[in-house]
Length: 65
Image (cartoon, rainbow, N blue to C red; front, top):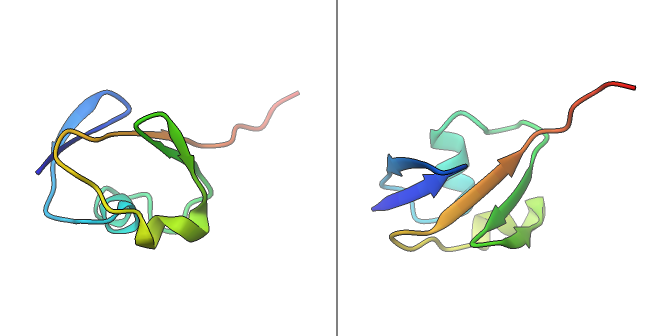
């Protein structure tokens, strides 16, 4: 299936947000996620099913002052 991660297209075999994030190198990182504009908490990622064409946003915290 094709998903869009931060507006970049990716073809993935994974069915859940957690498995897609792992396969794309985000596993274990502190990030915030949204699917189709709706926030998804870290605890909900394994149960969040994805469909062809879904848009995933990933934001990593930045340090600074």
